[in-house]
Length: 360
Image (cartoon, rainbow, N blue to C red; front, side, top):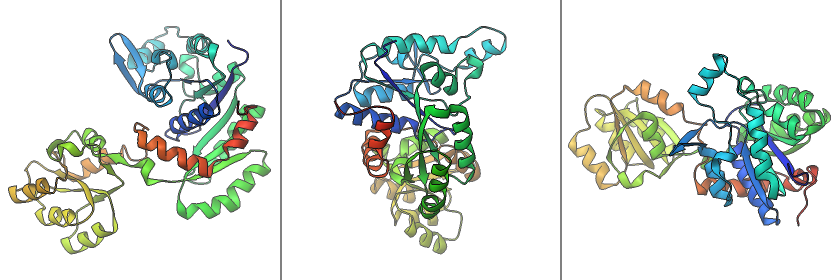
């Protein structure tokens, strides 16, 4: 391994915390400072393939976003598949850390800084003989934790991580803080953490632009059929609204929610028309029957995507809720907006200085 390379580990205590976005944004900032940057993931879970090569989709996205030339399969050498898990449980030896270290040695040879994105928490991957904690210790890497603030329990998770990481914990970023929680976090959580010796680099507000889902992602989640708006698959949905009430109350509710997807029965023509009169990005219509031709024609004329699913409304809601707040960063606009937000709310200068990184 290149002894001059600085490993910057980005970890978390929860999944879908913002590690990929933070890695990408910090990578761009470091490139702007003149550094040659590399990227790796401890464990690849969003698996894709090209020929006989398995790779991680998130690693491929960061590779593209940062313009890296490294082989994508080396950027996430430990790929979590069902076959691998089954073989390990049956007793097959698998040394994930050795695979990772070999790939790290190769990729870091010409890099100033290696950004490493951790697993969902510090322990995930132990059955593969690798985890975030094992990797941090093996590389003696300084670590930034990015954790979503959902309630005060996150403080316990952060303090537990401090006990495990010791001086290797450079600090934390509290992510996805709601507007209602910001004052409490600023006045109570951050001062408390810093009194416990945990540096807080920033508090990032929950942002609809980063958590929005595309019409395409909704269609894929519900396995629906597109009846209109085929050219609007990349439109972004910020709110999900269920149309299960009377039309008068529905309209009042629809007016309050912008850039929304409305889920309702395909037989509810009154609700569908009310939704089309407001800021609706797509309609998700449920049930065995198709919407009537007049309603569908109106949606087609307005070029509003209509997705039809044969499930009932409750099952459809469940499928869509499964992707809300768990959307991977896959769009350039998310990176651009994420860059602006992190620059505004995170003290990246202090973060880099804690790693011994300065502009070239």
